[in-house]
Image (tube, rainbow, N blue to C red; front, side, top):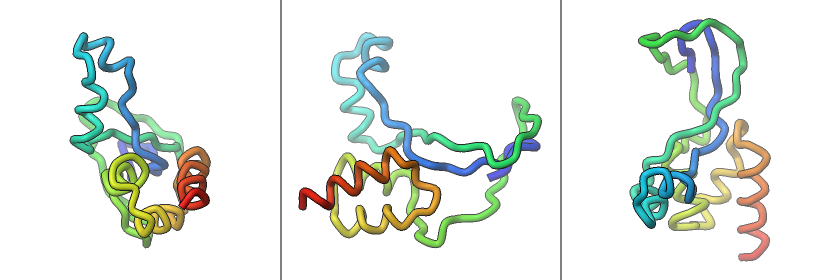
Length: 109
């Protein structure tokens, strides 16, 4: 996607951790947030450029696998469906960390 003058590519979901619950002072908030499956995401910069508040976000392309961030997140952390795990492993931009976690899941199955 293009944001301002920069081009970025989503690589993995952003999973809430215990630090968020601690910061908010709400015990278990991280687990509640995870169950809602509304995570953010991490991205890599493909082209540097100026980005400012209010810049438009333009969708440029989508991986042919067609999984959303929520679907990838659910495959690893919620439903752990083997078919979804295999599908996620076909994502070209998937981070090495998440790729390794999916591969471990399949090896255990």
